[in-house]
Image (cartoon, helix red, strand yellow):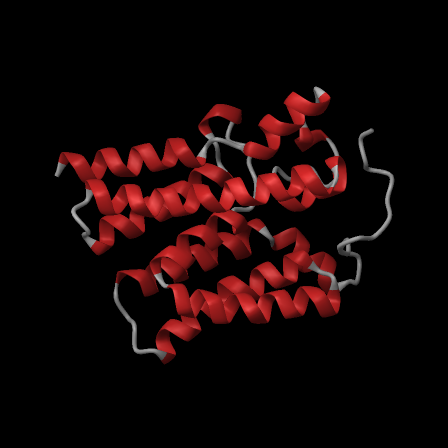
Length: 203
């Protein structure tokens, strides 16, 4: 019993490592949460620091989710609920990081890592549609919401109603809550589009 608890705690602490905050501090000596959209994630890193740092943050946040799932499998003896809870813990850590006063990102990159490791093909199908929506609309937030919304739907279609299905629903609720202001902006046509010029870049 003790090992699964340790695994969940470790994954929360891992998730709490906010790479966008760390990288912005290291490169520019700034708190990225005080620039751009104020979000500690890859999209705002792109807006504030540029493509290179954004790609690095995205990759590291995805890897964080993958690592959490494997930690759960290793310490939890492949128990599905332990593995699922470890993935959720990493996302919670990313969103509410212990090391950064519980002000983190929105958890999508880490969610991608978690769901792609837990349920690769449903996540892949949802991801393809999400990327297509970003390409067409240039709304990263909309693509993110489509991804978390479609993943449990594809799981239902495949007949999966176990721990990973419920995990995907919990993560979906997290994502919609974290994106609630983005949803309002999308409805009113005020959401920032990917690649749109603005005065937020730190040089």
